[in-house]
Image (cartoon, rainbow, N blue to C red; front, side, top):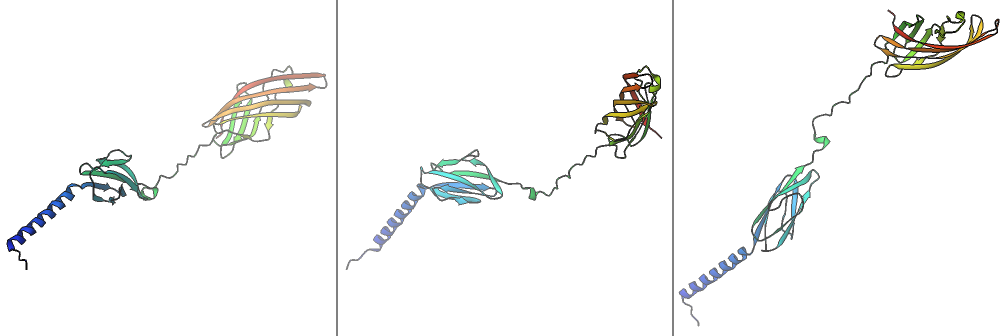
Length: 256
């Protein structure tokens, strides 16, 4: 029977332990760590596989291997940029030639529901009335009378009445008949208005037709404008046909 001396056993065991230690050290030297640090709500995965972490993870890759890292956003985040061994907001590919650390930064998406500040209410602009409501009394530059009313909302002109404009006709007894407009006139938002009119009837018992324009603009408490009239008159007794026209400026104020 073969007998082994105790010293020989010790030497063999020591050699085996040394060989195992050297083999283990050799394997460690052939693995290079890549560390990924994730900042914010997101995940980073690698190709080749090995890294898939939402926070911080590390994996050893064989020397020289090209490692591609890809960011994966969540429903509440977006990828912002790389730091460390990679930079910018594009792709990240590194070569395992030495231990490397890569930082991936994700930022949360701000939604309207997450805000505690209510939006301001819509602004409502109330425009002032185009004209001040009331009864207006005034005169023209030739002393003829002008009266009218402005509705409560300041948008309508009614009960317009004015004396005949001095048209320069040869027969003076035709000139002094007041004219009344039986319809309403709209006032624009800037306070202006204009209305063409036509009237047919008799003046001093003679057939007559009048056309013209009543226009103006309101200011606080008053208004001003022009009256234009054209007369077409007939004198049956004298067999005379007269046509004449003229215009006057007017100014009116609210009657107390």
